[in-house]
Length: 276
Image (cartoon, rainbow, N blue to C red; front, top):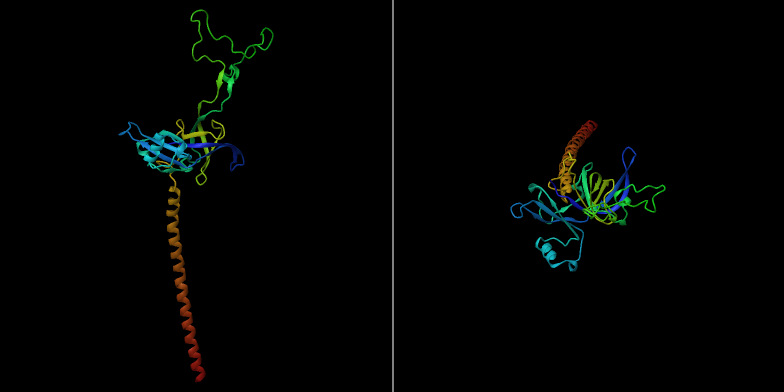
């Protein structure tokens, strides 16, 4: 079990595949996502990682949160969230996680606060069918009908589907595919719609129902990890190229010197013949 990420929803767009078909995607932005603290089973009784994103002024923090950031030597974060992880996937404090934490083709679960709709009727809120639209119904076509019983019990039970506040609740959309990631700019492109309005915070985590078969970065996609791999791959190529150049140049120089010496000997022989 790996840690998740906190992203900001920028909106929706589309990307074109290699076949030419367009894919509707939601663009999520990752802004300086760092590990603030970690919980261990020995100390806290469970394994988890606390993640923070964004920036906030210290004067807007409460004293407990200011002390929490100072104690872990991390700059204050605007949004903080905690993710359960396996003991082997705990990350050091201050480590920055990038968008390459998720892999192309991987399935993720997105959790956010849905768009608020205000006060809504029973048909819109719970998808009721309404009453008859013909004769006999007196201005009650979109009503929800009866809600209670007779004198016994004489009340409306809690949880009854009725009109009320719609939206603005915690929603999780499962099994969304990651189409593309951009670690340099911090963008994650996810296929389909993600709950929440533009500018809202969304938490992304590995899908629970569909396990990814790709080689996911463990314990996480850490900043600078990709650069180290590239530098290690380029080093032997440069050494080989220098050796090849030195090997190619050496015989060419030797051959040229031999030709020069042969020409000098021929000139001397010709000179001796002329004198004779």
